Amino acid sequence: MLKVNKICSVMFDEISLSTNLTYCKLTNSIIGYEDLGSLDRAESFANHALVFMVQSSYSGWKQPIAYYFTKDSVKSKDLSNLIREVIEQLQCIGIKVACTVCDQGPTNRGALKLLKKEANCNIEEPFLLINKQKIVSLHDVPHSLKSIRNALAKYIIKYGQHRTAKFCHLISAFHFDKTRRFQTLRKIRECYLHIDKYKLMKMKVSIDAKTLSNTMAAAIETMIADNTGLPSEAIDTAQFLHEINDLFDSFNSNNISQKHAVPPLRIALTKKNTAHCILENNVGKSSIVRILFLKRWFYQTNASV
Image (tube, rainbow, N blue to C red; front, side):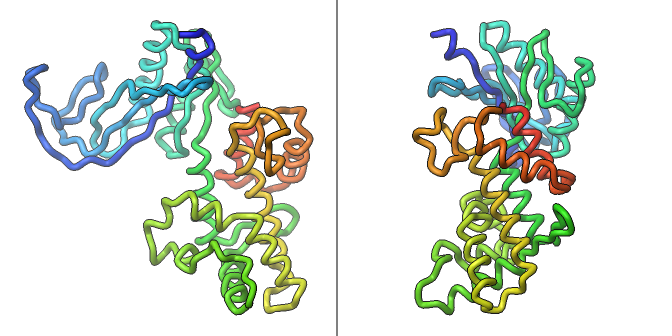
């Protein structure tokens, strides 16, 4: 294997399981109890599995490398030990771990903080050290987008200089658009805007991307200009959607150069890219970053550059 193909990311997440006990002849043991490998077993029934997967950053190969049975969610201390153990084992066989990827769950954040403290790293910095190797810690971008959409649907988000984003503006824009002969929001369905009634909608990233989009922002702005019923304050919501759309584009690309990037932000993050510099200047300096799930986007930006 080429050396460059050994540069990888380590991803980990938990999945739900049905409780069950099975006898394994190979190991002469009962499978179904809580089992954290080197951290020992417990007598409680497992109902989750913690899975680690490694994926090459430069080629297409990926491989699940470890799984552990847990009772509910694993503790942050145990998770930090498992992350270190997995990465150390990969380092022993010549794999260079460039980054870790996980969602923003409190257990994951707690485990990463513990690893940083143990290595005397700044908690606010987007990396940790294992065996003197710097490893960037990234959060799952689709999960970040879902967090924003769910928060906007539940709360009024205040950002910038006395600006507010309201989900009710999206609902009003959708209903106004339905009365038009030539509709702008054809990709939006009514169920996308009522996630309290349709629980499964909370897990659909494609729905989040359609809802928090430039298309929705443009529709709101047009309706304000046409005096079709939306209040002038809805322009703040349109601006918020535009900025979130640009943030998502910045992390949703496999293009290296500007030549093949459509839209222009959908390229690799660099400090020299003009579009990304403008985005960071417009959004990063506002009070929008004080919100936890939005602050994580700029944590991501610093980690990726």
